[in-house]
Image (tube, rainbow over all chains, first blue to last red):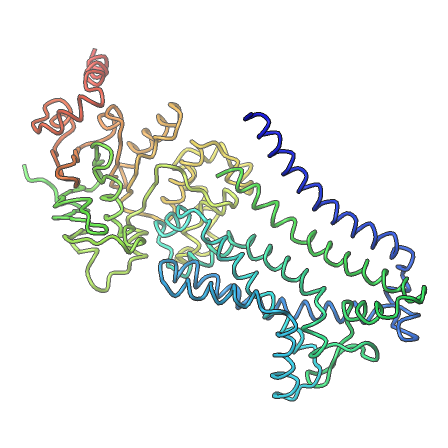
Length: 283
Length: 270
């Protein structure tokens, strides 16, 4: 009976794993098979023509990179600050519980509401109009909870012996934070940023009111009235016209590029993750 | 003959955590260039006592402390004491080696570079001197930039000692530094302790009575009374180990294999 239960349990877990990997592979396969023929050097380096039916996605790619880089720059210091506050300074404080609760709350806010917030604050109140900076800030706010929570969990998981050893050598609390806690929590920060940016790269709702237009934008030169093109919004608009085979090809090609961008983000984080794994194997 | 003034001295030290007393009214004297051994049963507060001697205990705010610890006659718990400078003067070596996931070179200089007292151009020299002092230089000189995590546990512990020495402490607190090591590494560390005595003062917590006899000049035996650690007995090694007066010490020595100690000692004499 126990053996049968064990087999059932293993089979169920394996089934779940196979199913989730299968769904992922199906999505990747579909995007790859349909978008592969559309992707070419010209597709990546030319700008959009004929309302997306011709030309490439150069400025969409650049616009998405600008948006996620801005989100990264906006989010990292806040995530680091919140992570250190909760993981180090408020470790035993009840304030920490309140702040973590707020982070989870923010994480659960639908992205379209964040887009509306950006519309009210940046586009209307500050009078920026559609701006890459507004989009970047909203995306940064959107990924902040996941990055900060990943960092807090990593700091919580750090063995106290490192801080104790550093203090025993006469390092000040600030030096312990910057030379022991931050470097060893980098994995949590990178993992959180990776997941967050991958999510941000594919988000349409927060940027469609604040930062992006379908065509006619190139590189932004200022903050006000400086929209950018983006990959997800491009896919969103093309998907509504995907009955045209030429447009459909461009749509899947754009999706493949977006997928590739997420994959490259994962690869970029690999050295940090591998280094942490090596450290874990030599406790 | 007058006893020399202690370099490090604990007076009436009582430590509590969450209303529970861990240590009660502990006195301890560490005379310059001597090794003070602290022995005693598990849970008697030996490690806690050690952490009180350089204020490392304050890292956990749940602990409260009364009494005093004096370094060179001045209270280390007094107002205006620079805690970081104090910890550089009173270094500590833990039971398990704690190497940072960095290179051997960076580990040795970890404290030095943050204190900023040694110019960067002198760092290699400081690292070499510290590694030589712990007899690790010849083993690692060709791989200084390799990860310190790849060293054996015994080498890691010597690296930790080198890192502590590089900062230039006057006193070194050692919390069972050989308990995780193989016999060869234990011998190497004991030899080091004996050599360090010439320039530093050592306070050594140990469970190993043979080790205490080999390296300590004086011994303090902690016991548990009414749930708190107290000093049962202190004095020279011979007094405490072979002519204990206190019943708790006798019981502890018996449980830790006093007979084997005597055998060991008679073998040496023979």
